[in-house]
Length: 337
Image 1 (cartoon, one colour):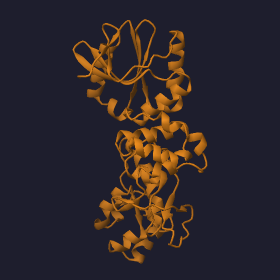
Image 2 (cartoon, helix red, strand yellow):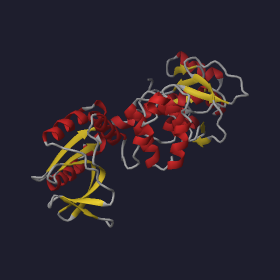
Image 3 (cartoon, rainbow, N blue to C red):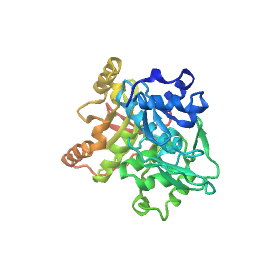
Image 4 (tube, helix red, strand yellow):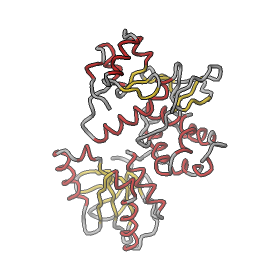
C-alpha cells in the first residue's frame, strides 16, 4: 500500500483519511483534479489502482493492531460503492460502515445498484440487484440499513463471526428484537440460510466485544455454555463485571476474562488488572484470562472444557437479577448496583 499521502491535494486529504486511503475517480475530479493529474500519480506509483475507478492514495497506518484491522475492514467495505456511480454498500460492507463489529477482516467487494440502472463492469467487484427502499447515508456513502444488511450477510459467515455480528448490532441498538426476527426471515432461500437459522437465537446483546462472542459461542459448541454472561460480582467493597462465568459444584466459580490487547497493554491498565485479579481469585474461584486470538482460535473452549470436566461441572444458568459474593462464594439477588 503506498504511503505518499502528500500527493493528495489538500482539499481531498480529509476525505481520503475517512475512506481509509481510498478515493474514487469521481471524487478526485469533483475535488478539482484533472484526469491528467490522476494519471500522473498512477504512472509514478504514488497511487495504486485498486479496481477501475478506485485508487489507493495512501494514508498513515494506524499504530495499534486493532486500528489497522479496522482500517482493512473499512477499505474492503468501501471498494464496492466507490467503484460504481450511485452504488450502495450492502451486506457485510454496509454493516462495517455503520459501526457493527465482529466481521472478518477481509470482506467481499460488492455493491448494489437500482434495478433500473445499467450495471457497469467493475472487475472483481460483485454488482448486485437488490431492492433497498430506504438507504441510509454514512459519511456520503449510501448503505443498506442495518436491519436489512444482516439477512444478506449472516448466511455467508461462519458460526462465530455470524453471532458476533448480530451481538454487536443488538448491543449498539442498531437491531431491535423485532428487527432481528424480520432479518432472520429474509434469509430464506439464500445459500447457507438453513445452516445459519439457529445462529440468530444464540445472539446475546450483553456481549461487550466480538472476542467475548467468539469465546461464548465456541464454548457452547464444545458443550460448555457459560452459566452467566456479564455477571456482577461483589468483592470486598467493590463491584466487578465478569465477562463469562461457570458455576462450579459447591458454589465456586470459573471466571473467564477476555482482554483487549490495545487496552490492557497500558501500564495503568496492567495495575488495574492486577488489583482486580487479586480481589477475584480465592480458594473457591478460578480466574482465567485470554486474548481475542485465544477466543477466535478455540483456545478458550479447549482449556475451559478441560477445567470444567475436572471439576464435574453441570449447567446451572444464572439470571440477570443475581450477583455473586466472591468472599462468601454464593449468589444473592441484587437489582441495585
